[in-house]
Image (cartoon, rainbow, N blue to C red; front, side, top):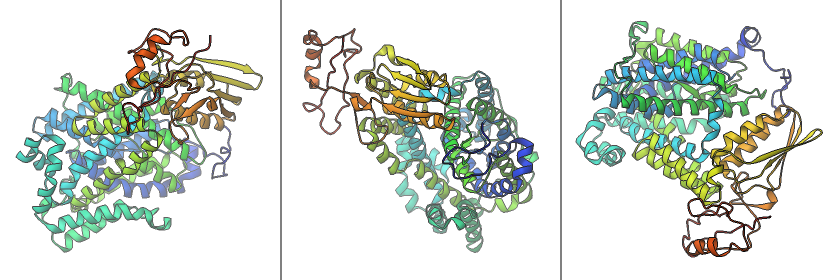
Length: 599
């Protein structure tokens, strides 16, 4: 890579050095960023552990190990590692199922699960499995995160108003209603039966601070993080109003090293453990790699993360963190974005962030124990709200009604069933819809493409329908192309192209340009987008015949003289291109345009 930042980068200084030369060159900016990040991470680590029904020290261990160790083994430069809200629901479920009512035993068995996950991640890194994240539908991923956000809100709300969240989960009201339905049903009761209204005020103020703080001038919110403010305010209010001990954190051990615990592997081969190994592996790896990719786009020098090393770094971090009693970790997007905003230049900011966390837990455990639980819960309610923000649903609806359907269905199943079921059903729904639009079953995982070279120009043609499940195959072919060429991605011979493929082609175009090439997308004028959004799904023209759903079978069987049909898949001809369902007018008005085939 050149020693100059990419064109258009906001910083015109040379690309920072890495490792020890990078420390000597950039220690001042990285030290300052690491200190600010530790102030953000301290209450977050405690709050995430609290919501996960894990010991508070477990969140701090994950933050320390993620910063001081995992960052050096990872393939990214500016991501920040530590416990994250996206894993709360999985840890909580694992502790409950593996502990059978005993959270201490449940967490030790969960730690054993995470150790195994870490080892698998290391192996996957050496097997160069970073490309696997290209398989999943983007709207399903958003639905998974939104569902996790809703669960965090429902579970943290009761603690924010002064209730014992774990006791509430075990209560008759919640047990009879079942799962999240019970948590929703219990909201009025929690508001009416507040044990201490002042605790509810602290929780409400914490949420308000998290919401309002980003609106303040950057000179304030960049160097005085909102989580630190709410923690200090909670300490002050708890002291002034003499809040009872039961509403305070009160579980941070005074002896950090004496509190380290080892995993319990006695149930590691059980079906429950195997289930959570798979869930942790999927969510942990996916979130980390997506975060690294997102932060690459914000890096002022446009450095590219090595996704295979990301697997190795997170795997080593998870193995060691869980091995000494910590929570699982990922590359966390909000703290990583704050790292860039605070002027970090190298991976050393992650190290300093972990070092300061260790200093805090060694120096002020008594003060940490005085933080009100409601302050941490109010912060988590806001984090959950941000994950499940209505704006996210509105944005996906703008992309396409079918994408909204994937997101909504996934989110609801995650909330009312579990994460694995939500992602599986959402993915199957997306595959079925793609087949209905004309993606042949034989092309679900491979798309037909061709490459033509014309000197410095390369033409990459999509020659078949392309659903999200085929993008891993497409991306492999794109990555094999020579760099620094004038690349043309030609859609003229493509069939249906879904939103995920279209969006990821734009992502690839951005990466290719950073390596010194140019990218032009042509042939899309022969398609109609499902919406005005840049990467909306594309359906090919011409649309000279339309058939309602009631006559699809007739169209397939009586128009063979005019159209070339192949073996049907699920009752729909292989080269029949279908518009999405009109969710507002299903029935007679639905349109299924059929594209004539050339000989």
